[in-house]
Length: 341
Image (cartoon, rainbow, N blue to C red; front, side, top):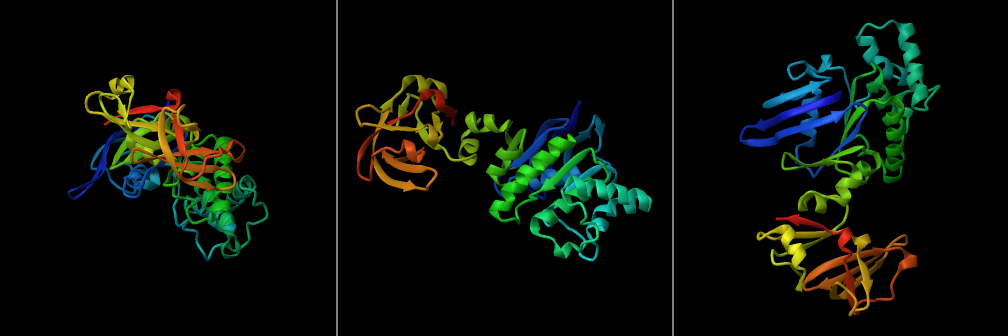
């Protein structure tokens, strides 16, 4: 059974449509990342799932039950906000145990559950510590433990790692994913960080202009984007104009043109799949405009007919081409995705 179903869910604020007719089915135990640019509707959608916003239309079901009219505190969801919203006047144990206290759970049972959760988040012995004495990563763990205190059916997180520095954020991504796998709880995270989504998710939901543009596994979204928006938003890609007659930057590929039809479209290929060869061997011919060595990778920028194509290699694979060289650009067609306009 699906843990969560969204059926034609919409949200309008006056004349503005923030979420537009979203339908999505999330299987039990799935880790979902809702990803998209600012203003795409992902946080509004999460708030409707949590009951913090009322849909303008559509239905939200949890385990087959319509929860659309049910208030937030009765939906059996756990949620971590971007601000974490920990109580500064309470210690760690009291913060985690707060949801249990307001449900009338006795003190001994609360203490046992708090100890279980502290062990789960690797903070055993921290119950009496003031939250003001914790690091950013430790406060994040406490917020997660508090949201899990009542063993919710669904775990919701809104930009939970955005306030952490890059190194700690990456470590917390792995920790959060491992925790979710250990508990088997259906989890939805809203993020604008593509690397975060690719690291943690079973299912990536890419949103744009209030709609779901693609919902698939991280690899599927990266390798087989459904449109130019997804291809351009997820990672780095070379998005090249392709005409209906098969013209690609001045070279003719009739079979590709058939794929996009008369309206034309784009060819998307990831920089790591582009190969640079001698000028007379490539699919296309261009001129190297810049080479950037980033230590772990080398980026080579090539101008082809006024369009820049980026190739990425490792230092060991680095070619001898330098700025100003004529170069052939090979685009392995098995790595190309043809996208209609």
